[in-house]
Length: 229
Image (cartoon, rainbow, N blue to C red; front, side):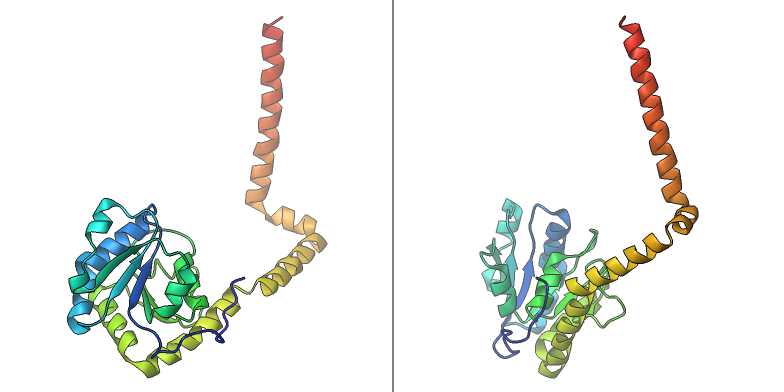
């Protein structure tokens, strides 16, 4: 269930620190944490010297474990037993993803937990849908840092952004609504099936080649059987 409910969300004052989360066997996650460690976090920490970044993720490499640096607030925590619990306690999620495709589960989970996020256009891919992002989307390094510090520090801004979590996830990921749209579309296609097939060039081409491949396969089997006699 992807529905987001405000009933169990912690408030701005009840939350603390930044969070990054993601399986380290997935290259985009490893690259994002490397960006945080080497480029982004030092700049954030310089402006928020008492704040920490909690880095969660299964299968951390030895390099990732060596990035653990409590003195500078960069804490490698390893696998999260309850992902939603740690996400829901953080004030802001950081996800400076530079590559990768599809919807990013960590950002969906952040919305479900009412946790604003700062990410890249790659991170927000497929989820903006014309609505305001529940946080900020920035690709340039300094803009990303500024957005993270601003969101972490400004309670009024944070509260306003948190409202977009429910707007986006309950609209974009509402299962019942999508099922209804799907069946309405199917009903329309069935009512106009012949017209749809005539206009569907790619489908027609694939169907043609599929039937032709079956024909040639049967001829090959026939020729093979004759050769074995």
